[in-house]
Length: 173
Image (cartoon, rainbow, N blue to C red):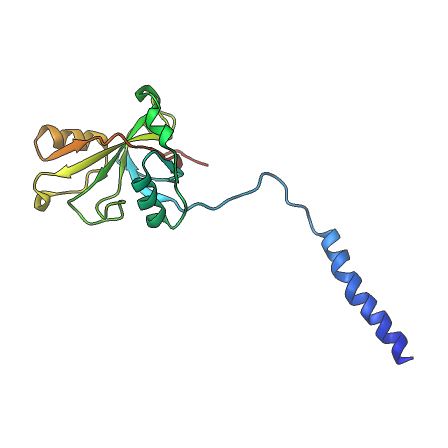
């Protein structure tokens, strides 16, 4: 009699998980993935974006380490015509912060919904002439005004980075 009860118990233990799995709802919609997002500014407002590819191996490696997520090297991005690119301004001195070089957060032009939006960004390096006088700049207008005043210089090393926005003023993915 005990053997009979044990056999029924064993069958129940083996069949229940199968029945429960069959009753579980199937995942609907597209597969989801998590990517670490960086914080930056566009038009003076906070935005969040991801790095997915860069045309330069050193930049891809730096961003991979910074975000703890792979950023692929795609040299062909450097061949994309300027008309298909927007800009990202990265600071290489000045105020300490969460930017990729250890200084203030990046500044983007052309957020989604504006003329000229592109996830492909031409890298512009902003350098304070006197880092002791650095202040946080949150818009391209602020950066260009500081350049005209002789406070910063802007260099373009020819690097293109794919940096789609994920959260911006008035929108998110």
